[in-house]
Length: 374
Image (cartoon, rainbow, N blue to C red; front, side, top):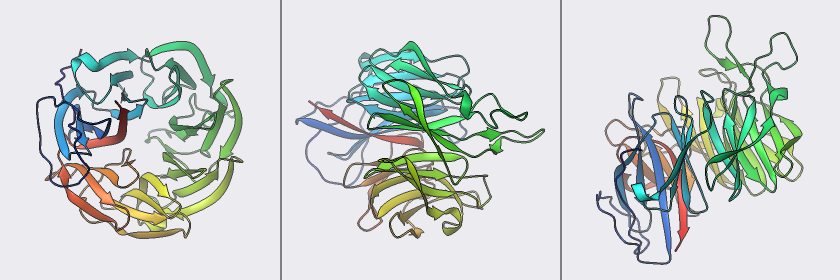
């Protein structure tokens, strides 16, 4: 079992201000908890950890749980799900907002060297886990972490499937569940002889009926190598990088009523860098983490309707390329700054940073919003 320290957030009232660190559990005072949870990784990528920022009382908690250094985080049904990826391939569940040994429900291995990527929750007893080094999606019971034995075969999406250049995996990455269907991004990469793995075949979204576990449609993407998916108002926004350091990626939208590709929202050239992550929070506001030619990262807003891009947002020195989060009022971004790492709060009405950076220990790698009814 992992080294874990107990912590919970005191829920008092809603305001934003400075950040403090506490080591002891605090009892919740009201009917609900609202927190931003971060999984973090060291600058040298040799250690991972978890931290928590309580939105309601603006308290930050540092280094609560040692985890794998290749990690990601999701929330569902008032629980935290940590994805320990390459080298571990575990799903770890923590029940509630208290990160303590007593709340670790399980830590389950999904397979040997499958490199788990994402988890999409269909019901309290069914979830899909995408595997980067396999052509089949694993299906688990998230209440127990146990694999059901059923799988979804995506071999038809393997890179260059059906040709003499075919790969053995589709490089399935991000996935989302919406209205009875799961949308899985298949990057379809290839490693040329003596070279690094990179964008190759046309990237596609596999649309899966979550009841029958069967692929019902293929959506071809305009750009290659999708990095992030974000749903807002019946549209699936896909942020793709193409080849790194080449201006060949962009953001496109898919109509979830018809599963039709609506085309480009904005291309990488408008950002002057690679699209590493996106989140869309309204018909007119989204955010993108951009990797620049000088090997830095920046946060920019964009307007999905007007198809325009905003200037670099101040207050973040090195925004991480993992998940961002939105609580209905503010956007939360992980900052991997070498001088002031932590969670940054941005007001989408002004694109301005709110308050100080919230230090949660190691530099954040990915964020998730946790809502719990008491």
